[in-house]
Image (cartoon, rainbow, N blue to C red):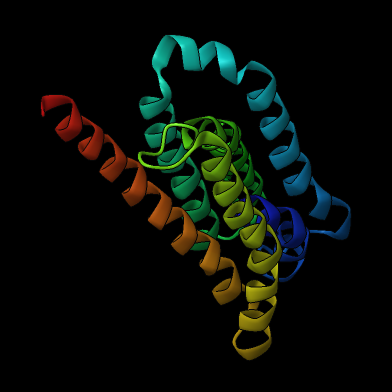
Length: 172
C-alpha cells in the first residue's frame, strides 16, 4: 500500500519535473496506474484461482519493480506512463492476496493477524508519500521516487522468501 499511495501522490509531479512532460500529459501516468489497478482488482480473482497466490505475488511484484525501474532509468513521458501501468498491474492483486493470506499466519488468530497486517499496511499508506516528500526536499524528486523502487525490491525479495518458507514447511 505504500507503493500504491506513493505512485498516486507523486507520479504526475514526476511526469512534470523529471520526465519532462507537457502539463496536459502529467495526469496520464496516474490514469494508467489507476486503470490498470482497477482492471487487476476486478479480474484478479480469476487469475488467482488459475495461477495461484505465489505466482501472482512473485510475478506482480517483479512487474511492478521493473516498471518503476524503467521510469527511473529512462525518464520520459512514455516510459513513466508505461512504468505506472506496470506498477498498477503488478500491485493490483497484492493487497487482496496479502489480506487473505494473513488469516493463515501461524500462532495467531485470523482476526489478530488481519488486524496486524492491516495496521502495517495503512501505516505504509500514510508514510510512503511523506518519505518521498522528505527525500525530495533534501535531494530531488528522482531520489524520492527511487524510494518506491526500494520498497518494491523488498517486496520482490519477500515474495520469493515466502515461497521458499512454504516449501520448507510442506516438506516437514
